[in-house]
Length: 233
Image (cartoon, rainbow, N blue to C red):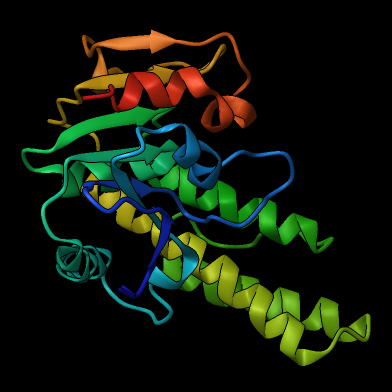
């Protein structure tokens, strides 16, 4: 079975479906992701991880994007557990319903968070961000594209590479806007799994939690994180 925006990470013939939400399954620096966690989950779990193809490629309202994404995700059928990492915690909460909800190093996304990601991307191009405070994700994506295409063009980088890079940054900004629209307020996760130094967002205060003595970049590669998230039946 193929479902747009989702990749099967671990399959089982008699399966409990587990859905794992994060921006990407690509290897980014030393950051472990749900592809690293999946092998440590129980053998009867079919694990689906979100990937970059599921995030908006075109401008639009974040709440509309969120509703459309939730509708597409219904194709996964009945879900036993929903896992969310970092900003993706809010999207996991939007999907969970009656399923078990487990969040890994959750982060509350604000307008400042989104602007910070834009600013960091622009600075990687050797430029300074110039967006006004009220700029939304689509405006920030367009402003980044102007800077990136100019810089990469001057360096002789092929236009196809520039297009891919601009598309990825735009998708990330729109993903974060979806996370902000979903929010953490009102979520009641069954468990929060924290890395060594991560601070629990105030909205999740009082949630059941376990803290592991690992840095954030290794949290999703830690077998104990998987064992806590989805206990063996």
